[in-house]
Image 1 (cartoon, rainbow over the protein chains, first blue to last red):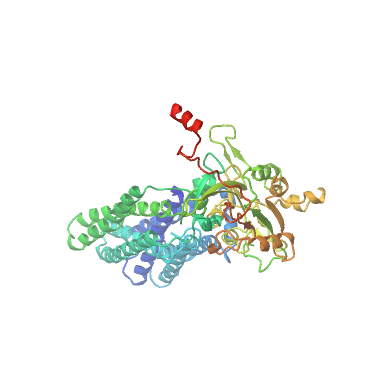
Image 2 (cartoon, each protein chain N blue to C red):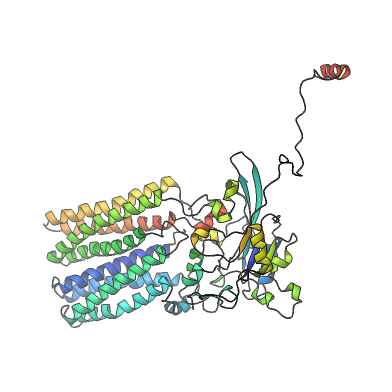
Length: 318
Length: 249
């Protein structure tokens, strides 16, 4: 599948934004963050910016962005519609949570309740995003449970890593230590989920073949000798993306090292090296590294996924 | 409404005979011609006279070569278009309701006035039936020539999809595949018509008829026998022939 920049940015950015919201709400409900106004503006502001930026980028890549509102109507059957609705509904409790914190100076009680409801809606939105991909049967690399697990873990994971550096920036070492621990657990889980995903994608039995796509499999090996068109068409540009195996392996190493291993080591170090600027610099490095690694991971998620239509254009199995 | 109808009154569709198709692409060209002025018009072309011509087509003809274990090959021309599936995944993924399946005849259509161009339907279709129109920003697809098959201004024999009326070889048939007594249903039953990628669970309405088994002349059939190789040895030849052979070689 073509790895479109807008969708890579949307899924990574809004995933991190929802992840931040989820942990802000949970920590506030547990009474672990003091409702400092500046801290609220920066954390909630960045989370909203990531979510809205992601949603906007996914809207702007539509052929007819001015009709985007119509996408909210088919929630009975369409995961894309459900995602849009869940995202919009989530803004209500998250808005109450943010308003209470920044304007009224409280993040406990009713505000925390709004936060927790917003966190639940955030998780639901992430689930809907994952299901858009997981429900597509022509793309076996997406049509599996590990796709869902990936989106559900990586969003909260990147959110926790981001929160850690902001807490350090504000000198809030207690919530920073909590999100660092959360990050460590989620980075380890995230790596396991992605390793399981890549293992499945590499070793899975093909679902469809050139033989079943044409129905000519009983005649032997099926090869395309004549394409319907000489230049690329929409189908090949959108769904016929191919990535060289050695490039994929390199990117996978980058995704593992920068997305998971380096942030894990940095945040682990912040627990022991608490003096001066060290935790701030380490968690900033963890954040940058994680963002780069997740971009590589998401790029691979699209680039490596083969679509059944390619079977008509020379691919042997998907 | 992007939920699928529980059942459709008719299942209008195509039957493509791969034994007959000669790969002339006339069906694809006439499809383009008709639809460039029909419901989905314009059927946009980009750079049509340039180095990389490209555009929206509803019908594409591929050519495949099959090779069995014994090395016997066969060439099959393969027209590919929307199969108007009973469980059309392109319909249920649509977030706007622009993509729908008609209850009266089972035809899958796009309402271009409300399509937002998210392209998700093209991801959901395993057959590559849907193509995005970059200029219009909406998705387009085979309409089964809905503005031709019901058009009372046309003589009755012309009320079939453009790809069917134009096929010079008679490889394409059109009819109600939901009616077991229809000509197309009988054809499918007689020739072992099959579904493309049944494992995708889409229940295609269109059927393909397999190429008939090749005749190789061995089982007493009427296929022309291959020429035997000439005998290289000269021993059985006459005196003059051996003499000529000696001079020549």
